[in-house]
Amino acid sequence: MELFPQEASSFAGHVDALYGFLIAITAFFSILIGTLVVVFAIRYRRRSPEQVAVDVHESMPLEIAWTVIPIGLTLVMFFWGASVYFRIARPPANTMDIYVTGKQWMWKLQHTDGHREMNELHVPIGQPVRLLMASEDVIHSFYVPAFRFKRDVVPGRLSMAWFEATKPGKYHLFCAEYCGTRHSGMIGWIYAMPPADYQAWLSGGVAGETLAAAGAKRFQEQACNTCHGDQPGARGPSLVGLFGKKVHLQTGQEITADESYIRESIVNPQARLVAGYPPIMPTFQGLISEDGLLQLIAYIKSLSPPPSSGATAGGASTERNPAKP
Ligand code: CUA
Image: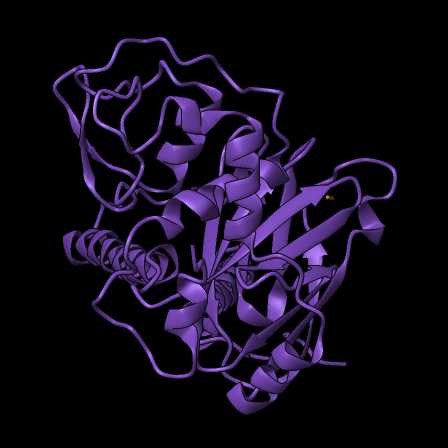
């Protein structure tokens, strides 16, 4: 039996090195202190009933040593841990996006080109993959031990995680948050494939409508286009070229229009109003499923040019922005 799962992502080695360090430090001090307790208990035991304890005064070098050494060790843990955390928390620019919805009790995973998978995800190795995740009901948690990442998927917001698979293989996907009676069955597989095999897989399956195209349809259905049209004097701001841009808010703040902002602006439009527009947009909370929100996000993203920096080979850049309006 393996003690640890395989290391199959770009940050698995870093996580394991830190974890190994923590285990080594813990083992060293546990053994040291445990041994000293036993040795001292024997060596300094009371040898006769009349024996009186001697007064011991502190030793300055000893006090300094056992203050400075643990501080140094914990600071190493802190900075090392922070650097690994930042590596995991910050996706690179050239990611391939996968849209994930969790619901009792399954994972639905969608590629931007229209491929949909249930409890399975095919990805190329050597390509950073970003997961945009939403829950239709309760808290789930997307957990791939071999990739050393786990991210809670909380209702009412988008969760993001990324990984880059480094070794071809089939890896367990778990839900790691108790989410009801069939939580333990909410499992699946990640298939990491060489890029050529991945392309073959993509061309083999039947791709449905692209996410952006599905989103465009919803955009019409919900009549978003009546206010967010492109014509001058429209009641709402145009969404063309919005994604990734700085937005000036009524409060004077400036924020970047990312996926979370778009989602919030649909379900809670008054939360961060764009400067110069009246608060007339109704909420779409409860009217559009999380799945539909992801489609709308994909559609609005497709209205902006993909980021020019960091475009990669291997078809990633086309997947990033698949809509052909
Ligand atoms: Cu979903 Cu546990």
